[in-house]
Image (cartoon, rainbow, N blue to C red):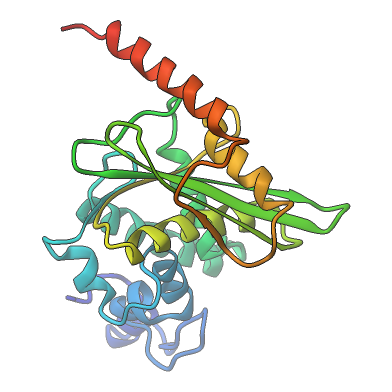
Length: 247
């Protein structure tokens, strides 16, 4: 990576400052690669997208790994997230404020989730919809979601009860959980979306079940009876929308 970013290391090399360390993690030399890849903040951010991978840049940019956030390819997503990490670094350095990696990814997903109802992914892709809920008084939060194919067919659902956490942490965890499950099941063409309960009653229903489930992750290969009515309603809406689409 050519060091064209005006990092502390680059500013030091140009004689603009005596400082060369990373303002976030304290590493002795802050290069562009350090900011985008090696800094603890950057690593935590990328781990939300592709957890437990050493060669995450190779995984993201390789041609056989395809994924989208509402149609945005990994190549584009890489550039967006790298820019957000750099922008976040500036906010931390000059404004004393920053968001965490999971919060940044959750906000990114929300920004790409503007449609008012569930829409199927492209052919041969799957879509992961996730949601999180928290009850601060009861000290309970839960994650849940569903994987569906291009025809809206149920692949699997998931749910987990967790400890108390603020809402963006729960939603980021739900998003991560769905992506990780899809990855572990061998899917590589993945569209993902964190939703609100008005947009997808199926994912919301899985989250509600998570609040009364055991803490361990539960995967449902068949829809629980509690969410079947929502699935039927969704099928009807999808069929109606297809009928009204121009030929």
